[in-house]
Image (cartoon, rainbow, N blue to C red; front, side, top):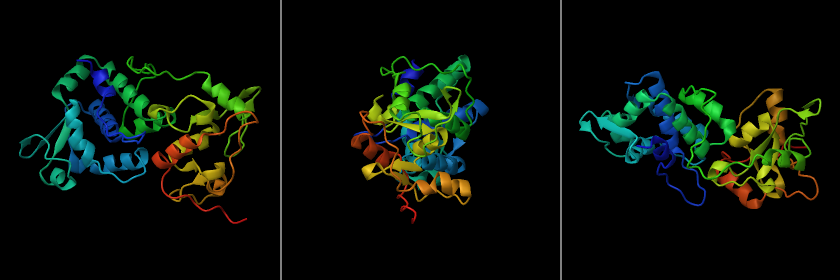
Length: 297
């Protein structure tokens, strides 16, 4: 059985680029727990809060419940559920999963495969990360689910037909003249820029092209906040800051809250600015909550 292919083809609800990472998040969480305790199972009532936090932080902006993937991941052949009444999931209702002691774990066949070939776990995790999340979130997400991956476990699944264009970073940084489009940071060591990254506006994992009009030159801080949905891009290419962001320090006010309503530092003349279609995808699928009003002058 090709477990990598099965991992890559998890059946997810999809419609015109809508994010639905419920199953990948539960699967990553289950792999992390298997790494810690290969014989353990995940009782829904015990892990519900963990899964809810994962969905809130790494899932789409709309409200959702961890009961949905806990039940539906069974259909992908990698997960099984039993209750106090016997094998089989009672459905995707939170109440049912809680009240009759639903517990899930990886299927016996997958657990056996992971024991035979320990490196398989890291390769499966990479598939889930690469196909569902931007690279800026991979490290934090692994930490959140308790996954420890070896540095060598970076190979991409062979059935992923698309390949990232290695030229994009240089093209985007050049277009934005090596400065963060949000704050203007332009640090270098000698002639080498440091702390500057090319961010995809529409995530590569969701069909975002490696084009300049889908890219922003951002400093490391603002790239992470952009991918987490704290920051966004509104009409007239002005910066959005989520009302859900809380920061009381002068640094938080200066580097995040004060950005609300500011115009982006755009690309140089002749370079295409971020396309409206990519901006609207990020606003609907990544940006969290309502934008803050611009600070009073």
